[in-house]
Amino acid sequence: MKTKCATHYAPGKRLSIQEVQSEFANLSEHLCSKYFDFFPLPLMVVNSHRQIVFSNQAFLNAFGVDTLSSFLAKRPGEAMGCVYSDKEEGGCGTSMNCRECGAVQAIMESILGKMQTEHDCQLLLKIGTDTAARDLRVFVSPWKAGRDTYYVVTLMDIEDEKRRRILERIFFHDILNSAGGASGLIDMLLDEVPQESKEVVGIVKASLFAMVEEIQKQKQLLSMERKEFTVSKMTLQGLEVVRAIAAEFLSHPKAIGKIIILDEKAVNVAVYADFALLRRVIVNMLMNALEATREGGCVTLGLKEEDEKAVFWVKNSTVMSESVKLQVFKRSFSTKGQDRGLGTYSIKLLTENYLGGEVGFSSDNSEGTTFWVKLEQSESIPARVSNAF
Image (tube, rainbow, N blue to C red):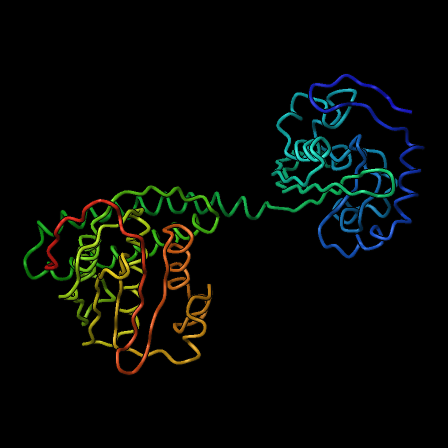
């Protein structure tokens, strides 16, 4: 027997408790249901009326109950205590607020489209006399059991992920603004301080520049991994980009006591690429080379044309061991200690996933170590660019 109720969004019809109990009994005997308790995330099974007919132990543990009986035949919002689940007679899914609920949207899309769906959901729950917020990622998948189709709903708590993103956004925004203000003050100091103090102020400015570079690198890498970065491509004169980076990093703290050279055989090749990404790739190659170079050593940057492609390269005299060579592009591998290893990984990520190019390296006793990035040339005619800096 189905009960009919008015709704502002999802259908309000329900099966009787006896009918749902019958569905529960049938599913309890199904082979798959016996393995649901091995699944670590909270999981429930709903029927086509969005009523809970089965759940795993993780779901019961999440809401502090021993058996499914208190949830049986309820809808997800009613079982979890959503503050909007009783606003309408039809219950969960039928109020105006439910139109914006990711959980209801995911379940309805799966029911109507007979497909797997995923939505994020922000819930306000009433727990006793207290109100609590939950951030969930809801996965729904149709499940054919006998002659009937049910829907497996899996819940993933993403509260930490959401909070981390908010804190990261605040951190990057505030600290980059502060660094920009500090850089402006240092520029003013350089014009005002006595000549004997200019060297010290210059060192402070170089250190600030290095700090901003590291922050920008981390911010960019996070947005890349989350696929949130928007690529903006234009025609760039490759040698101009390399020359500017080489000149800029002469004052970087990691370049102190070392020599940065732009290869005299470097040629200009125009590329169609995102400037920020291309710059970041070359900077990362340069930084890795500087970190591997001893005081008094030399790092060389270059650009050449090969097989109608632009090849950006950075070279230093240090030779990598065989063990290091085999792990170079892994995300968390580093020869510089724990919790490092994003440099070469980001070179590969940015080049292959966003610039559509190739990345590689060579390292031997005769030539030292060279990292290279190969990109498609731009169709435009390259301008002549001097390789002096």
